[in-house]
Length: 108
Image (tube, rainbow, N blue to C red):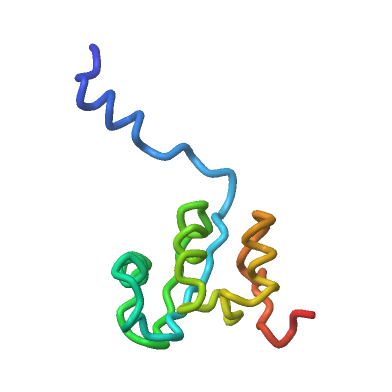
């Protein structure tokens, strides 16, 4: 029994099984997007942020990193302002954005 072309395409689109739990990043909306370019406001909405001080969790992916970098002046990541030198270095290095579960006060 052969698979239909639609089933074949759907099985190719499914994500490969992950080796372990994906790292998550908590993004918090800190500053209003009023007065900023439309694409920046659209990025904030695409992150799932609708109200100031709202926090959402997303898997740590290259696409998410690009969105956070675009609106880094409006959001914070895991309690650290996204435009801080610490987080900018982690974004550039491709290292984990999340704090690894430690609260911001416990990090050096």
